[in-house]
Image (cartoon, rainbow, N blue to C red):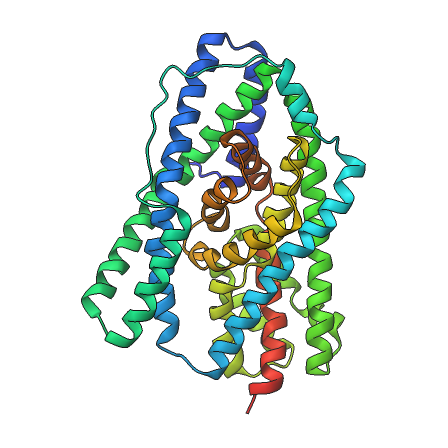
Length: 385
């Protein structure tokens, strides 16, 4: 009999449910064992994320350079601006809306009176470098490889990227539900679960609405530039949206997105160029989901994020997301180091963000691929000939 394979979404839901229930009855010894795994996994995650940037961003940069041209620079620039604007749109909307539906400092207040659990072992695994160092090094090597034609160096980074991808896909992602399970179990045992579960549903619903609103804005702008009906164009992209929602991957939906883009009147040459490129550099939906969840978690912990701080965070994250398409939940993986180093998130806050982020993973990639069609409309207007 074939093994029953559950999607990451289903596994995360099971982990949240089991952890919440077990935490109500689990003895302290068991909760502390779970806490030990939780702390160790968080350290491994911090170690692997800079390697993820080095191994995947570097090949992506010199890969783009092979076809460098005016259209390439235009598409990458627009995708970057769109990704940053998506994060700022989500930040502004969530910051204005969440204080009305969430209690500021809710988790912080609970933490003061809640029971705490200490791990049996607390190992410190230092990363080889911080995230900004990894990002700068990736740009330096990637750009230089374009000009020096360093084939051996390119091959090394290609293979190193495959090693990192295998580690993420075979070890980190499979253990992610267990990580969330242990975190939920501890929260339930400490009496924080009611607040967290109620918040998760509100945050996810808000993220879905904001992603759809951003798509409407994108297509109104693109439709105006291309002189086409934006709502008809958006409707033509609906199959790509549904496919992205179900598969939870921007790259895997490229054939469907390309076909939907052609239905909007985009030339075949432009569609074949823009859609695969944007699947690697345009992550508007994923950053909306991340920004919405980050604002909610920070607000509930009594640590609101200032606009200046979040703006700097988005400028860097929009570059780091170049590494994300090759890995499941790659935007989340790429953001972990920046959440803690730039926004001041604690490991507990990061784990909570992961639980909410992964609870409904599909709407981020769905927004990503649908937004790619909007960029293709604008590019076709200027580069069709």
